[in-house]
Image 1 (cartoon, one colour):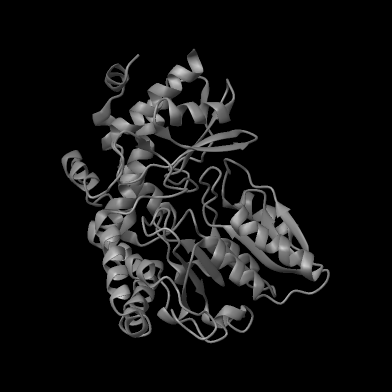
Image 2 (cartoon, rainbow, N blue to C red; image 1 turned 120 degrees about the vertical axis):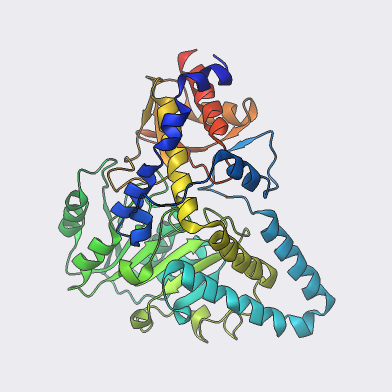
Length: 419
């Protein structure tokens, strides 16, 4: 069956009209009311086609791995190049003056996007960099315990394992359900795993494995009576679901600019709550949270300036519109996969409140790593191989994807699993 035949089998009008699910998801996440209203503005496919032209992507490929690296729109690429050219025209003057001031404005854009104060924002290189800064700045003693989960990315886990070895602390792990019944099922597992020596709880806001959205605000409530820091890896959250740090209640939150935000590669954002500054004291922040300090040295100013352009561009495109579109694309793919008995969805549903636009799959046939390679090399479809028990592939579409991209993936998976 070719793409066109498969497309006919999918009631596209029905699927696209189901984007009200996006409003349900966003409302269930407890975010601003506008995201939970059915009046969220929808755009016609013609408008999304115009927006796809804002990117430099190779159109011979279907890019379905924004959760690893998203694509920058042209305006961001141009902003970085322009800043680079300007810097090289007078580096010793502009590199310590005007361009630092412009990069500082990115901190304000980041604070507005994440819902926190400007003086709580640090610009980093990526989520891993932010998580490592936090881990290195936390005081831990022998036999202290760090509680995390069995679904953490290496970038949010290795920092704690390294610190634990150095300081003779202990890392504990909560086993997360793939499809939770309710928030209490998750919270009860954390409650049982906490000990009097637990000093750090470090979790993902959205798991990289199957897009499970953890109830961070409820977890913060659980930890509030304890002498315990809540650190959140937000690499798969910022830019894909609404994030409001003033509501989440965590002590530190790290994310990347180059995934769902669609910003320059090698950029990130870290937020450390004011009342946690005395407890999270990494050496590179000894002189403050500014873009350039005596403790940090010279950063990649063009990239940080372009990150500010990214955040402004996201705002101009309509943040609520983008969130709704990402949920809409996931819904389309789910519909396209319903007729494939050997492809099982292992991500929570959007309606449950635990789901995100990330859609992970378990294949009942073949070598999933080899299938991922054939999708890339033969079909020119880029997805992420996860390769964990019950989780084989991860699909993460963004605004530069079309419904036809997802139909193309479904057709390729049909060919792989039914051959």
